[in-house]
Image (cartoon, rainbow, N blue to C red; front, side, top):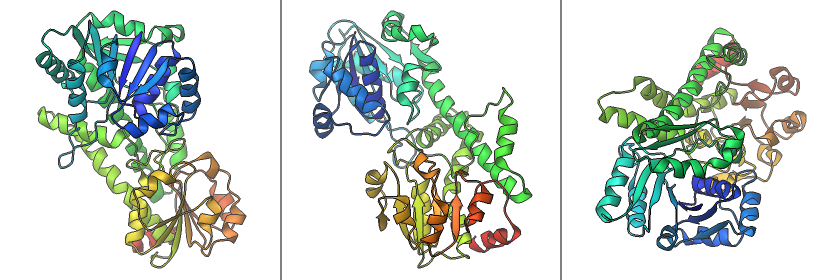
Length: 447
């Protein structure tokens, strides 16, 4: 099939490369000429394991090309995906749909023959209706159908998720779209990937509901972690004990500093706003959003406490900056709030991340970026592990302790065993695994 991917960001680039790998002819379009020039030259603007090789293979095979010319691409397409950004709108938290609607306007003017236009971007309920209206108004003679096909890609595992999905959701109001979308995803039939056809509005809501539920699950175990600390229980064992219940499941039950990234923060907020406008407020998700925002800065109080109640004039090493491992995505990463809170307390921050430092430089100031964990920790009063990169899971703890000025190791991902860290000479602080009365007194003082 001839497929156009409008938008060559994270979703568009991964989706386009994977569809090309299925054997389709795919053109990835973007307004950013520098990004397209980079892709045409063999570069990749984002970090995702396996993506560079996948792109190179399909470019070489002639199935994947890149351009800034949306008009010329659309006129030859069977399917046009809209995969542009939908950031939270400043001021009110609603999803900013201006890029989606602008793409629909340009697509409408260049349709040639029956074409399926598919919203791949995460959009609020009713967006497909508006895309349909825009195209009909702009080009009354156009033959087209508008469908919704939300993405369910985890950063760091996106290629696997696309090729071996839990499900494929397609929302439509025009039956002519069904055989076209079945053909797009026909290669996945070999893996027996279930395709759920629904109404368009239902499809749009499925995406938001899924992300909101997962965000709520993370927030639940984070609150359990706080309770565990206060009563002397172990949140990891609690998570295992409830996760073995098939009705609950073990995924997304890992206590930490709060969720971040390109999806959960903006999608939960957009769902809250959509629900408010529809007269059906979602109190659980409203609370989830509020708890998650406050939690990130609260993690900095653990660092202040381990530094005897003050970080003023002290060096703190922050290890792991991205919101999760195996990505360079810094959007709404907990590290940003933690660093800001530490700086507000007068700390000097050194930082290290295997992939995220270039993106972080544009988002934080007065931070010294280091080339490895040990150079970041040199002379530090405390080390804070914020992201559980593999490169941080087996640090030489005695070596780390030997180059520091202080003794604090704040492990916000629980990747070390307390007895091992303490044997290396650290005052070790984790999340939800109980604390000593002495440390609790320090936390109270830090608050």
